[in-house]
Image (tube, rainbow, N blue to C red; front, side):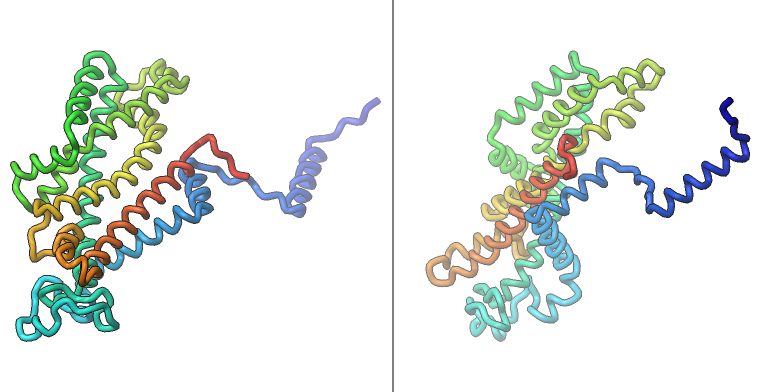
Length: 318
């Protein structure tokens, strides 16, 4: 006959097994999330991390500029009439690392304050276009039918016009100024985001968990907010990150054409416009703000490219 163990003996054996597992160093598995795994993969991408670090540096320098730039490098908007001629278009030096402009103002200080304009326009314009694109893309994909037809045909009309010319026409109507620049860029940038979000939603809404939520009586708003949006937003994060760089380029082009930031306020675009007259003799006047645009836009592009790989759920950790 087989010997039967009492409950006390069974509990004791279980406790012995648990203590043995603890001594063996058994560690319970931590729960994993999409964003946690994405951050882990992003940190392994050296180019993406370089882009992120450069963006953080630019943001910190731009936000803290009032604390040290006027005292160390000089006022970026006002020129000292007593030293204007003596300091006009000086070559880069220890005192003026990026040289000085025609009015004797330090170019580095103007580039730093110009970063405020470019970063603000890039972020705010992208936020506006992303908000509009998310709403219209969700309506088009989730409800389909007449909503999809109307919204997508409106997007086709917007995208049929040359983007830069459309922005210039809108600025001509609204007037110059930083607030009108990001409003114009933001309003005209929604069609591409709406198309990307619509495509992502059309893929996600066919999953079984969406049908299960609908069968359980969940409302459309709850299905969109709790199931469809969180599983579709990854592509928008990538696209919006890259769009920031495009908005910076557009603002620089508008300021170069005299339709963006009004002088004497500095902008990378109007700094290039001022320096292009002296390209043959004082190239640093145009080179320095040009490098600022190049490195910042490249940083957002590298970060967006890294986010695309990091948020790809098909990628598995080695």
